[in-house]
Image 1: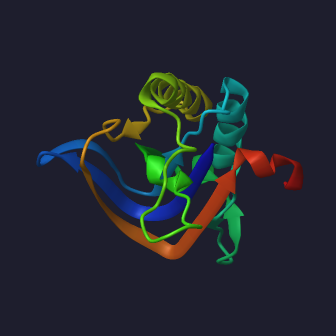
Image 2 (image 1 turned 180 degrees about the vertical axis):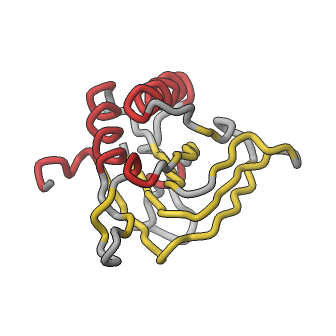
Length: 152
């Protein structure tokens, strides 16, 4: 499982002009799921996201986590995070999980994040043509991959 975590002052997802998810201060999380991913990956990644201390404290240091700033999460599925670009100029997405595997893990990730934060996780629409708007704060952008968890 791979996540691109962006600290935002606001973010929204629209599908066919309708808002499907919207937050103020918090994280826009772009989530890629591959075939090898499990519920353990979702649990580990969700805990890392919620615990990530990248919000400024009174001294301007990145010392606060999501809960410390009453932040929220907008979670958007993005299979293109597993693009392979080694050959040619057309990316391959063969590592990305097919919907029958990815959708249940995406839904479990939403549930885990809801439980960890105590707030309703805002979302995009899996597989839809989504339009994402955001005000990146910092910018602070962090890439996490559950395959690298031994390095954390």
